[in-house]
Amino acid sequence: MFTGIVSELGTVASVEPLDGASSLTVTAPDTVGDVSIGDSIAVNGVCLTAVAVDRTAFTVEIVQESLQRSSLGSLREGDSVNLERPMVAGGRFDGHIVQGHVDGVGLLEEIRREGDASRYRISLPPGLERYIVEKGSIAVDGTSMTITAVSDVQSDEPWFEIVVIPHTLDATVLGRADIGSPMNLEVDVIAKYVERLVGGVT
Image (cartoon, rainbow, N blue to C red; front, side, top):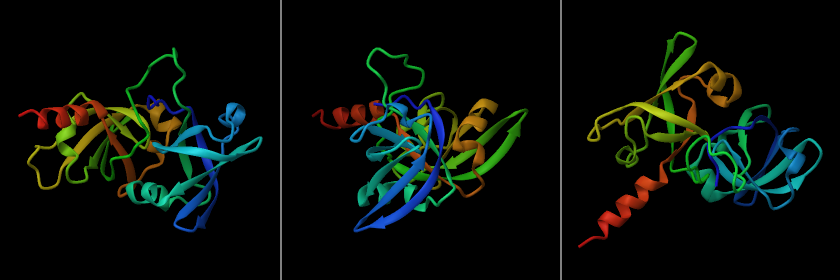
């Protein structure tokens, strides 16, 4: 489990196609210090498993399921990526419950400056709008964010907004995003469980 607090901005060192998958190597000297083969690492919000580790970088394999449900397939050498190690039992819980299981990919539609911060409007893939609420939480490229505005639940083109503070702009890939950038979205898992349980009541 993760909390959506990015610990390091890694740099994509290489992307290599595999049979039905992809191999991704990320340079991340601050992250690899306590990473072993088989450990989990969230890369732009996607929980992946380290298959190789050296002093400055780690390699993960991205299966077709993850490529189809996330934006990881668009990564290229030199790109920055958000990184987070799983939460340690008993550790500080600063964000919200993040599983690293991306629900869909939204697009950055609008950027509005608000002082030193930026307000982002991001499109929602159809079907995800019912899981978000104003002042609720959402993981955007693995970063725990507070939703500041939402479109009507019946909207044909659903969206939500977040306000990104200067520190987050500097410390995550959100500060490097442009209009049209794809963003991995993970909605609050509690909302999905509630829907499932309520739907099962007769």
